[in-house]
Image (cartoon, rainbow, N blue to C red; front, side):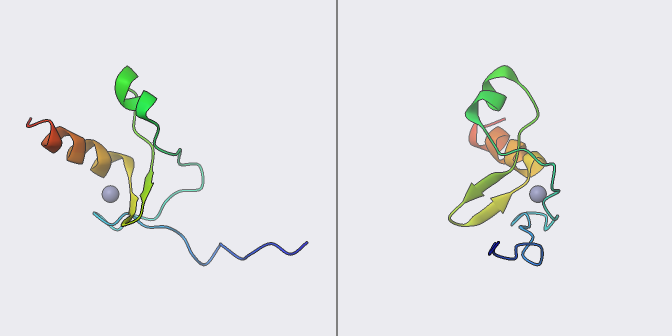
Length: 63
Ligand SMILES: [Zn+2]
């Protein structure tokens, strides 16, 4: 087995700096459509946790 070590490289939210929990789900557009809790978003700028992602979306919607 030659797996890369990822335990020391925990992704953190670029907004609030919280560490991504192991059980965190990935963001899926379906979550927004059905009104479910948003998962973590991984972008080129870094990761966003669910709460920060929802806040950002609310801002983008002008509410
Ligand atoms: Zn956050």
